[in-house]
Image (cartoon, rainbow, N blue to C red; front, side, top):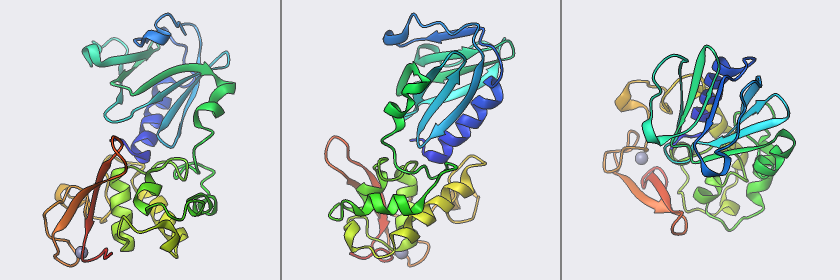
Length: 259
Ligand SMILES: [Zn+2]
């Protein structure tokens, strides 16, 4: 599942292909907007807010997309045969480039003035210019009985963390994922570490939390269930957190992250 840093990179790719250029094709393959036509309008820019993408178009319109579990945007030269087949949900193209949205979890067309309705509920964006650790901590503290694992994934507290950064941040801070928010003293240190990890990875593909970019060495616990902890040798545990059907993967080390 794409996390905040991957969405951030996607926004940068879309800006490179679409910003300042007039759309020559807009193909919404979702029933709700099947007749929408943005041809002739210039794209102003694309911004990411947490895991949401907002592509602003001349005339006060915003194309809102979300990658959800396995969506992606591919950018390719305009003349090339479009990839993605029947998984394509949206194509935005100009004379030079085409941006092809594949398996997008959400495609919406709204007025730009309406953006707050879509993303106004989000907590501080870990990769936003307005990242505010104090506000993230304040929002987390508002529900002290929640498990920290669930609270970190709730984008209303802070926006951009998915299952990988959740697992890695909690490991690095030595926090058992089911610990209650109210029992954690240094929440500021926790969210600041998450911010540093996303910042360090936003410029390139891959999620590296160990500082070692070799494919087998990039993470401490994520993707390592049953393997020995890199610090203490305990086998890494794997489980699920959250109420059904929203439960999501969690990995942790019982040695480094005791109850
Ligand atoms: Zn360990």
